[in-house]
Image 1 (cartoon, rainbow, N blue to C red):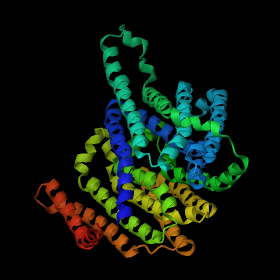
Image 2: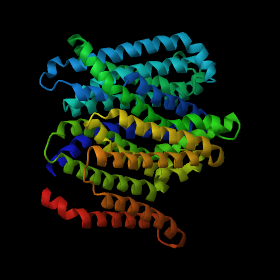
Image 3: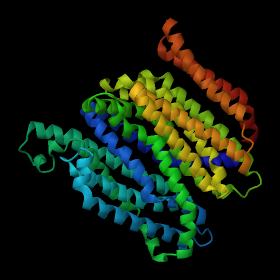
Image 4: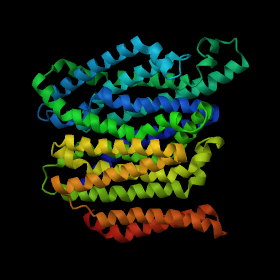
Length: 490
């Protein structure tokens, strides 16, 4: 249990940056959804959906490749780090130059001919974030979680402050005194572009804070090592790209596949994206867990009890994810106020998306079989199959059920990937996962949620009181089944 506590502490530190930082960013959702229309927010959602795809392509899987080949004995002359960093810098420079060359045509193709600056600003954000990922990976590998968290928090705080400055303060002053100095820096025609400007300035500051880690460029470029890293990392690109398809494609397709006019489609996209944000607590925990777990899985693989520890990690991971599922769904009457009134029409997708993210987290745990056995190509096939399922289901269901179809497609995709990964893991890297216990906790969470929906219709008690009782019932089950084991190993 000690090593699980260590992993939990690392997850908590990364969670400070992810959960606290993203929570501040999460508070921007009410700002955006109260200050911008559903169609305008749809523009933001579309760009960030594209960003997900490019974040994978521009990193080329070298983040995970660095973990696999880094020099633990000579961290001050880690050629794997400099090789990865040099390659990622070159790829991103070429990408940025290409964007500058085709920007007018690209902006017109995306129906943003009036705002080509959106594409230009966003390409700079993508480049800075991709290059920064390698120094961040080095901080994770060296267990410098505090510095990692600090830089992430600074970036988010800057984004929040700048968003408030441009969207609230500047707009207010401009409306009251259009001839004031604010007119020099504020143009209402930019609109949602100020969201991108705030993100861009914060990304620049983050990049500057990571400058000390960029000194590793002088360690040189190892061609033989690069060839091995490419062979290992290319399948990770496929895996990452397929993952982004599963996560982001629905928001890219809704604009084109919904059976309405273009304006209404953008409204529906905005509603769906805002409600997707209500599943953010689950996503934040999974992200924090992934930051801590990926280097942990590699570092602990040689231990004699590694597989039993991995099984325990999955079980406690699911217990906490089900807790998050219940927290959001049982208290949805509170969480709904984080989005504007006109966006709440899509609240029905929130439980589905939470379960989808839970399945994604299970898949993250189960995916150690191909990472630890260097079978990344097989892992890529699993991800591609999931991506193919996502594409087919979205094309099939969006015209019929709208964004609800997208939510169900996401759940089915992640659940299928988790099942396939478990079956392949049994063959190539067997781990004695407590499958029945894991499924029980998920089933219990769903039953408690459905019970709340049914009891609310016939109960005279306050809705929040019923929610609290059901949450306590879940915690009681966890204490009964796991309390003694935790106490004995503490």
